[in-house]
Structures are given as C-alpha cells and as structure tokens.
Image (cartoon, rainbow, N blue to C red; front, side, top):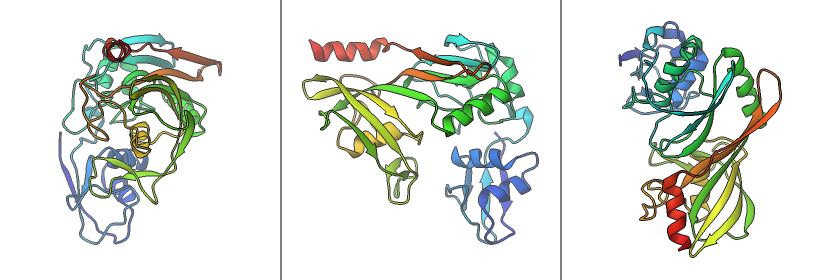
Length: 298
C-alpha cells in the first residue's frame, strides 16, 4: 500500500470533497468509501466524510488510488449458489473478510471472486468491486455481488429503498421479551472506541425486527431481519436490549459453545437486475453452529 499525505488548504471544506479534489482520479463517492472504511485519517484520527477540515489539517490515506491498485485475483475456495450475467450469490464461510482493508490486502472474498469473475475489475471501485453489501468476517451466509456497473446500480437502489430482504439466525444470551418485536435505535460510532459501533443520540436511523424461534435453556435462537443496513447493526441492537449474540467478543463475550459469533445470513431475497423477477435464496446453518445447537438441545 502507498501513503498519500495532503494538507487542508480550504478551512471548513468537507473531508470527502477535499480528498476528491486533490487525489487524482478519485471520485467523491470513492472518497467517501475510503473514509468510511478507515483508510483516511485527519491529524491521526478517523473522521466522517462530512467532517469540516481546519486550515493546515494533515490528511493521510494509506490506500493506492490508481486502477493498478485493484485487488489481485486469488484462487480461494468459495461456494457460489447462483450466478448469471449480472450477479453472483455466494455462501460466505466464517473467517473470510469480504474486501481488502487495512491489514487485510489479500485473502478476501473480493480476491476470490476476481479469480472466477475477472470482469469485476471493470467496475470502477478500487476498494470493493461488485460489493453492494457486506457480512462481518466471522458472520457466515448469503451475499449478492454485482458483475457489472448496471447490476451494481440496480442492487444499490434496491438496498437503498429497502427492497432487499435479509434474514439472519442468531443465538443470543437470555430470552427476549416480548418474543417478537422491533428494535428502533440510532447507531453511530462508539464515543470512546472508534472501532466499535453503539446506540448513540444523533446516530443514523436503524431498525431491526426479531422473532424467537426456539428457547434453549438460558439461550434463544432468533430469526432477525435488519430493515436498515448499518455497520454491526444486529450485534449492536441485540446487545443494546440485553441479549448479545453468543460468542460476540466485541459486543458481548466469548462462549464455550462456539469459537465465533453465532450469526448466520440464512435467507436473501431481491429482484434480479436483468429481469426484475424476485428470487430468494437460503443457506443452512454451518456445521459449527449446528453443533452448538446440538449441545444445547442435548
């Protein structure tokens, strides 16, 4: 990775506007994405794209900004459950990061996808070509990827207008009351730990639906549907109501039941960009999460 250092020369200018203006070949949307993904600091701190710069502020990005910096194709085994000329639907395993980020330049889902769909490199997104939504590294399950700029725009519109339905299975500590409900609480950066998200006043609107599917001793298996798509939304919302995801070391605690967080993207429904036909895909629980349930049921 290369490092680009810039000095703010227009007091009060937005960070994303400044970066797009001075970083050659970078659009404002790409600048926002770099900032959101943590590749940009202002005087050593991460800030929002809307952050207003002070005169002389030192802006540093540690990501190459040219097309030559596209991630390299790598032959990493992945499970593709559907593909056509527009999209690829992947059943992501746990432990696989979706796209390159600081400290993870290789070995990601994007690297694997470039090996099976080289045309992804033609989508003008240096950071995550074809990626329209994400799963955390240790969350398994369904993810749709765009194979063209047209498909990317169509899927992004569906996500923005909340036409994509995503359903997760989550095992949580305790049994939520009521057994079915909606969590509505704004989410933003944690005020003291910028690597975490939290329910905060002034955060972005966030809504999560849940339903108890099974009670297992002092645990509950939930079906969870995020209406919005904020970073770590399900994990933050469930922790906020006192029922963190089992095994979530960031928002809850580690568990002997599973080596990772018990969160799986089990169903995904959306309109095919090519025809507008609504399709729905399902993914069974992986072996490690099935084993955790089996221990509780026994």
